[in-house]
Image (cartoon, rainbow, N blue to C red):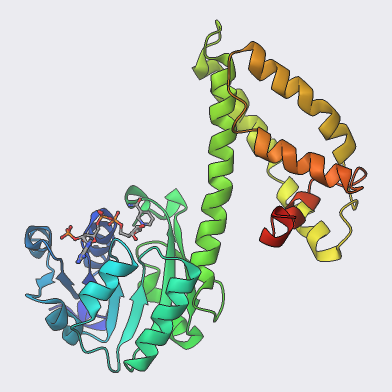
Length: 298
Ligand SMILES: NC(=O)c1ccc[n+]([C@@H]2O[C@H](COP(=O)([O-])OP(=O)(O)OC[C@H]3O[C@@H](n4cnc5c(N)ncnc54)[C@H](OP(=O)(O)O)[C@@H]3O)[C@@H](O)[C@H]2O)c1
């Protein structure tokens, strides 16, 4: 064992799916002693050739090191895997995607078993792991002391962004960002559907679409400012009344192109409701108020 290896925090990693394997490789490449376990053993033995110690059981892997990282399919598999292990005194970092409620419950569950807990939400796909220029990172929430203690080790596979002591916040940030992403994907699906049967090359539309989306992105900062101030007219550029007046153009165009408006109509309905409530001079921020479940069923 080299001097460099001795200085690196040893890591136990449970779960060697696509993501776990990518994580494992970066810690090994960075010289961290790594103990791995996976339900299907061949995935673990493949890493033995790269220097990982392969544990026979999850309990043995947990016993090997104080820092235990878990990257399994879902919260149920975390339960399955960790229930037979002794977590007392361990630093448990759970990178399995979960809901905020599951993360909070898992934090309490870990505390009851004598472990310190950090939850993580991975904002990357496996090829981005260990590639800093790819921009992937992981949201962390839970014990701030635990985050500080392992910040450097956790920063080996991807960037680290700590979002608070509430263990559910990493999951909440993760889902918030991905939800916005699905809104963007929905919009681009509608845009491509509109041109699909025309003599327009999708590859010619793509850069125009990408540039337009990028140009619109700064609007999120205006939305945040309006939410903070409570004044939804602050800095408004295109007020709601004007935007609602334009919606028939979008719906008629969809009809003329033989495209279902089903991805657009829920948002347009919310815009119209806010206008009906007197929000005509506002930005689109009032829609957020209507999304509160109580407001949606009114
Ligand atoms: N892949 C991505 O792009 C991506 C991006 C961000 C976040 N994530 C999150 O990272 C986590 C892992 O994703 P992945 O891509 O590695 O998934 P994956 O390739 O499907 O691997 C799932 C892992 O969970 C294990 N597993 C599933 N059920 C189990 C159970 N009941 N008991 C024990 N082990 C069980 C699998 O073991 P076997 O090998 O034995 O099946 C495997 O190690 C997920 O929570 C995912 O949401 C993934």
